[in-house]
Length: 217
Image (cartoon, rainbow, N blue to C red):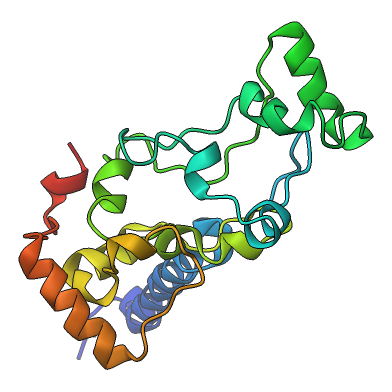
């Protein structure tokens, strides 16, 4: 009796198994890469034209975030301090330090210091900085313990999944308005945070969008 299936069909199950294995490896590799610091830029710490230590300026000297980032409460984008802001102090303090050569050159020429941007949402994402800080979201939530950083680096992934964690449960992150710029403040307990956050969520009518149109406009 002749064989009903051709000889090449004997290898078909093995070929399907290999294809399934390859596809599974590709999918697994893609998911793994998505959650790695390389994709999310966690730990990204580029060299800047002039060194700047938040640990000294904020933690030791007690400078408020808004002294340098003066637009955070009123603009969609936070601003990097201009040279005039730096020189308000450094025209007298460490005025001849070699570390501040780029700042002095900018002051003399009028050319802005080319700071390397670290925290940046993709062009296809809408993000309003003022909305967040005016509704109980601290600098700490997105930038980590930046007040203790000798050199600024990206502490959080800033991914869509990471953003949605807050948008779905904002009560876990909302804090008193008086503590927005106090990066060392912590609630007494997780229960206190949830109770306080739920209260602010109701009082301020905080209802972050979780659909695509909320951020992808």
